[in-house]
Image (cartoon, rainbow, N blue to C red; front, side, top):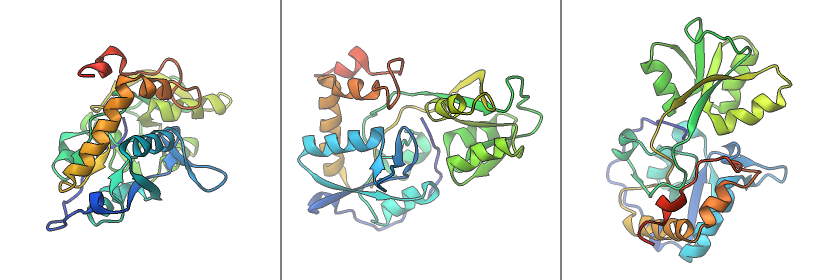
Length: 250
């Protein structure tokens, strides 16, 4: 799914989330349907429902915290929250600085959104959100990369002619294309990037990570997670799910 964040580990920090009365869940709040802020000013989306269910199953009291994407790992390490739940793809680079839970979303397709179906990706800049797996992919594959801090800015760059296309998760871009009245289109070309989405933890929080891993596994085993993924308001009935693979070891 989303994001390749290059961050420097903050040495010497010892997490104490598992000993706390409240576990703080950190998210971006700007990447629907994964997470966003609703009209009431609250965190909403797939990860809100999913995270609340995980905390219930793990017997934890949780609260939600929002943080800008480009500092989401450093602020985990500095103790501003205890878990990252923000559409973060599991990558080798990130595993050098944080620990991940088992995946809760299978690897998803990345897509290009452009103003025309015949857009030439080599003719000008391709936009991507800063520190994402899509930004790394653009830079590594001969395209001219232009980075923006938020996903909204990447789409605006295409609308304003600052970029020929934006590369992001298809689940994020498809509704934008559908709602544009034909002004924006998804290109036929798609990319397979990343190794699925997981929760992020400080290296010192093994006990807390274990609690969440057990809860994720229980949701896979009883089918709750697949049913949640395929809700129409989230990823829809055609979304990739865990299926029988998710029930291994149940």
